[in-house]
Every structure is written in C-alpha cells, then in structure tokens.
Image (cartoon, rainbow, N blue to C red; front, top):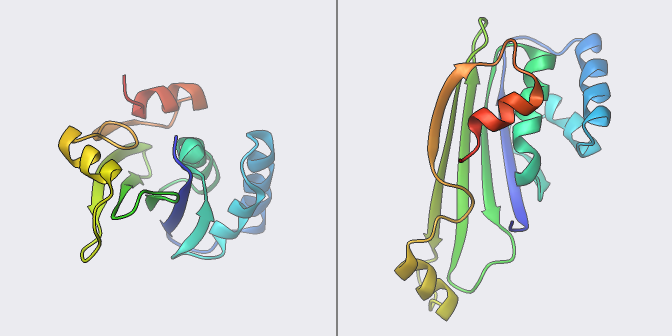
Length: 157
C-alpha cells in the first residue's frame, strides 16, 4: 500500500463524554491504533494524520463502539507520488441509531494541471489503475458485528 497523507472529518451530535473518551483510548490501545487518533474526538474537521489507510476500517468500527451514530469523511492522498499525478481515495461512512451503515469508497487518479506527467503517471492513466482498492458502496448493520466481520463486509473480494 502507499504512504498516505490523510484528512478526517468527523460528524456526531453532542459532546464526547469523559466515559466515551476513556473507552476510545482503551479501544485505540487494544487495537493498536495510532495514539494521535484521540485528538479526532477534539477536532471535528480537518484532523490530519499520515499513513492510516490500512487501519481506517478498524477506526470506523472503534468510533461506532465509542460514539454510536456518527458520520465520517476520510480523504487519503498518496504521499510519495510520481510527478504530475497522485492516487486519492475518499471514504464516506454513516451509521444511524439502529446500527444501519453506509460505507462508500471512491478512488481517483488526480492529475496536476500545469505539470508534465511523468512516465509513471502516463502508465497509470493508460492502465486506468484503481489505486487503493476497488470502488464500492456497502450497506449493512454494524450493531452486532465483531471487528473482523465488519472489516470483511466492507473490503473488496
């Protein structure tokens, strides 16, 4: 997978209680997520962190176990990209009070205007390569899902 520059925008009703924050910290430790994620509860928009694509599905599940209903938009951009282009991915996730969720992943090959495309970028355009994972939109109910089941349900086959 690519090294990434990531931006998280979290949306939820209300304030995070002290109990929720403690639970979130405990789950971060248990699932070996980056300790910086605790700041996500304090910064609703434009929380930035690097190289978290591989763990974003775990984080989504942990956030549900902590907050209940919420929504999140995550932008991933290839950090070390060839001159003229970069892979980007956007994840939108929403879960309601009943545990019904909607997970959508969209990939994009971003071409920088006014830059000469490198050979690698030309290859990427010609191959129409995916980048991160295949685009997908998955709906389900997370309420009784264990972490492994959730990750499998939103992952490419």
